[in-house]
Image (spheres, rainbow, N blue to C red):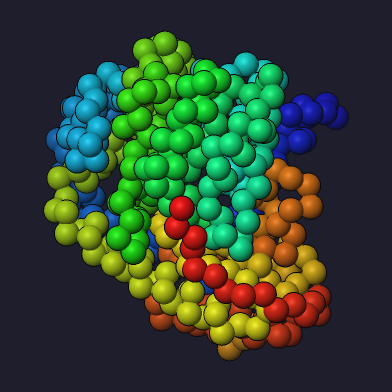
Length: 410
């Protein structure tokens, strides 16, 4: 039998999908699973956007332009303008989700063997796409005790090596929920400019900043506008993960040309998804206002319940819809597997993402998990009931008592 490639053997497993077969088995046995493992919202997709797909007078589902429908890109310029960003349609390339934007961006900006710096924990798929592009992610550790606040610009500068060609952030952050303010990004921009680096920023969660925090787009860093590449998606904004519509945005013409060459090879982004995405831009602003209020209430629910669990360390996340937590357990991977294979409370259990998959540093995050508060508050309360009982019954529990912290504001 022929062997698969070394690349295929070594690609990192997704921490939020790796236990999916165990979850399916548990469901088949009659247990209810509360899914806190993946950022799949239960919020309704805007009905107007779905209706636009149903009613579109489409007779042939043809290829679009490789960089996406012009009408959609034109309308997107108005959306970004609302965040203080002026763009032309040709500075936006529509992609098959943010995932493709990340991958094509990495392929276009970095050579094999280059390094990118990223604060950890970071979205696990960054590591996977970097591996596919033969790029190394070098981590700058953040501390749960500080609410995973971004390290200083000086810390980033100290970590640079001759191989470092870029910095990759997610703001607001997945998996920590930390929001990086304007002043911090401007300080980091000085490092980017001084060392001629790329600054990649995943801004998928820009609508979801809480406690009066303002979102600041990296596209507004005028001093380094040729260095900035922004990744975006409608998946979380409009609860439309299955549409698979993202975007890569940059003022750098050479990057746009390179990304577009790859985009031509894959022909076009999804047709129905673009119809939905364009219609979603006409949805009343009240839709997103209500969604943000609901996520904020869920955030408070998770924070309140974690405070009540002995030995748990966490913080109040400032954005997105994720929370990291440190549990009094020996190994989060074992704990997450045990939850699905051996634990049940009132006919249910909870599915979490083990923390180690969000780190590049070996041995980091072994007793941490990421939780996505994307289910309704009643189910969240029930999921927290399951989690609280599970932490008491888990055979690998270790006794520790660390404080719950609110997110550090830089």
